[in-house]
Length: 262
Image (cartoon, rainbow, N blue to C red; front, side):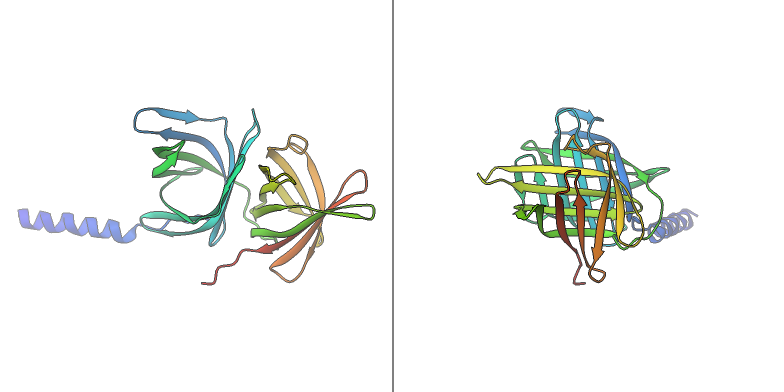
């Protein structure tokens, strides 16, 4: 009888293991809280504003602390299996520094009624080995636009009269389910590096124009504002966006979609 009970228990365990599913991550998510445990002290942060977007293969996050406009963002690829999500960060920028070396993190994902919780058990924060726990809620509605995906800027400049003023920056944008974000690393003529981010909602206003509403940004001048932006597509993997300012000057930005070779 004991042998039979053991077989039944083993059968139940094998059934539960075989039915466990890989996390289905594509979507847009707002972070509700962030908890850092450095082995001694547990710190819970709720003032940090962060949007995270997963597409089919890529992810991006943008983060800002409204009280001091401290900004950071990251972009990379990811994969999921029954043990969780593996993120391969290829580029990050925070405040006055950036990092383009590849870093890999294993995330434990727990779905919730309105989003998910994630845990990174071993990450270095403020030079200390830490455990990072984040809680997210799902935002946006399922929809499809030609902009869905993660994009990298290839060039940008301002047009002021007859003058063309190029930018020296690295910038990424992501769009999904009616939400967008941008993150940029800017370098001025003296070599000083700054990080800027923004995120919010967007909608296509016809085939050649979109409307972006910035809900949070490290740039106070655009936080809470809406902008109509002209877009011109070059196939499905390139586009140009043009912002016309009140003084008739224009900012022109070229983007290419990030694509995996797999």
